[in-house]
Length: 294
Ligand SMILES: O=C(O)CCC(=O)C(=O)O
Image 1 (cartoon, rainbow, N blue to C red):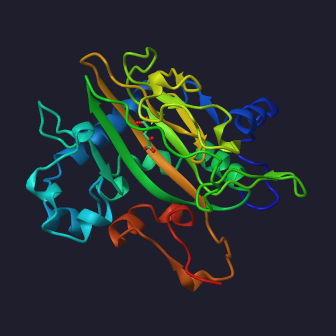
Image 2: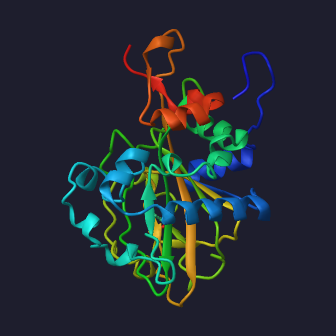
């Protein structure tokens, strides 16, 4: 965000705040232009070109979609080519359907890190400084299942809850995500993002089918075009509709979580990112490091 005293770089409108509070998500239409979408797709290509071997992933700092299970175990089946049905390799290129800690494997997503609008929005929803806790892409080659709907306001999860602080009149969410849409998700057949609007405030577990959004009467498709960004509270029940045709579906996910934000602790800032990422993004250290303790 802007430094103290200057005008904020971006402010959510009352309509956006109302929608986010009520539904648990908003959509920024045409946020990125065709050139940015092309750059982000090239970033996915780069990540997919990284050989899927333990030594290379570890050296760069990128992670398997199995995260610690694979990154702590050089013998994990992931390294032997064993992939989830919904993360199968791209049949043309052999690229994997998801790479985590993506910032460590490409600089082509840096435009998202440096995006002042996204930074301002996630800071607003957190109610204070944030750091980027996850960055990954998902590629699905149709036909492909949508995956299980997950999360919700109940039971309250301290790591992903939605909150609004009425006393200070600010949002206080513990985890919000930006989903950058890179392929045509304007039709349900193409497997758009799925949401249960309002579920971030639910006081009950969802009694409907959580295995398939198309069978859950409370779920809605969030239809979107390349360049749109879906911003949601991680506590809202979500996943995706199945890709029921042979299209390729691509999107990028950035997770933002409140950082301790004590700038009087300059020598205690830590990062999950390796030095090559910290050096590349040294103008964005507030987003990719956070104080270690207070
Ligand atoms: O593929 C999608 O659009 C949703 C994925 C998802 O639910 C997640 O990454 O948490």
